[in-house]
Length: 158
Image (cartoon, rainbow, N blue to C red; front, side, top):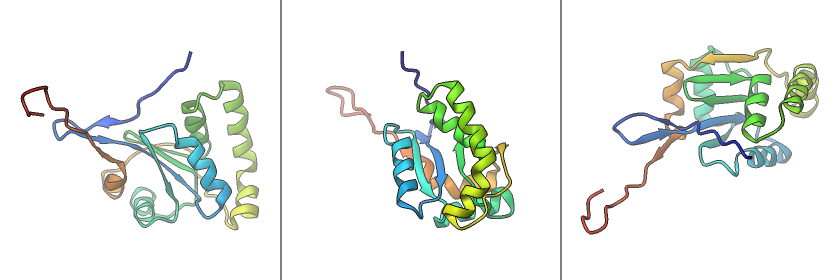
């Protein structure tokens, strides 16, 4: 049985739905392919490169810095590092024992891997944090999905 999770958040009467945002290092074709694989079957997650302008503004507002990290914004939470690994893999239906092993591998190997592959140190930042209002504003355009109006047959009204 496949378990699906809807992380889109309805913002009320405006009819705007918020997508989750996966922030990743898009400087490497392998990571772009991995982000595509992690999000291609999901209409409620958008993958955005770490170096994108709105992401940089978001990081400054959320952390008062621009930490180089794997980040997943879901609802009103910001997940970073191994917490992002766990969230993304669980959404993809990966079994919990494997998720736990991959989270541990990220915790141990993330920093050396970051220096070797990315050419920079991965931020020493892990866990889940509340999304600040200031930071949320920088991602608003990336997270919005307009609902498609459905017209009642014969009325012409949405």
